[in-house]
Image 1 (cartoon, helix red, strand yellow):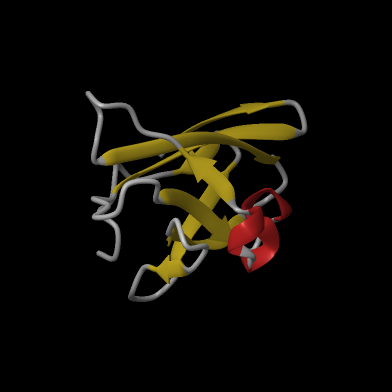
Image 2 (spheres, rainbow, N blue to C red):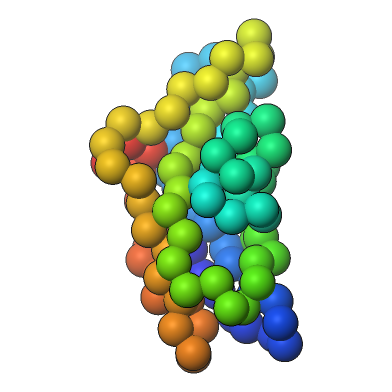
Length: 110
């Protein structure tokens, strides 16, 4: 994930390594912010991948710059409309005045 701030909004780039076994599966980031669907996978931010980037998925999401901490998880949306949530505790996005404190590209479920 990478981030830059601009005025009252901050552009956050979420990314994850997520191999999918079923063609047509989507990967989304879902969490405690409006931009992340308020924990509803149907409204989470959709990540994209390309043949040369797979299994890395990514998306840029605009979030309020005043956001200081947001819990989130990555979710696979299978073609039959069921959800596969990653195991483990929630991930945490921490923001600071110079922009969000972000890590590299995590692996789904780790």
